[in-house]
Image (cartoon, rainbow, N blue to C red; front, side):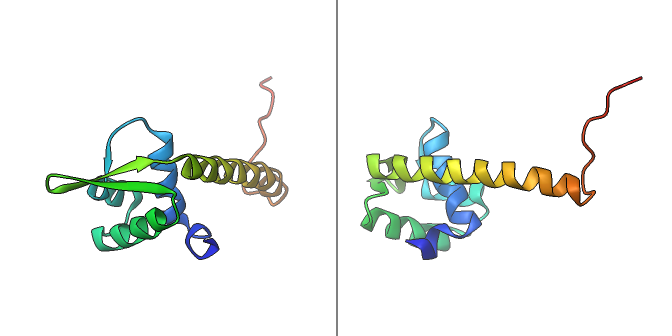
Length: 105
């Protein structure tokens, strides 16, 4: 699974599914995560095989739904991303990339 989730777009797609309360299809997820349909479709099929999402054919569309296993993984990824943000903030200030807030005089 690390071959999937150590990349930005698959993480973004999973966080979209578990973060926003709306109906997702392969097409909408591909568009929102910056992937082409074929890549998103293949990735979602791998995730379904691992029990992370469920795919349901509804007419001509394929609906992407949540699973408990996927929710736990999405929560872990979100926590990891927050930890990275916290770790990067002091480093960026130390390197002069961003300025800490200064009190107004």
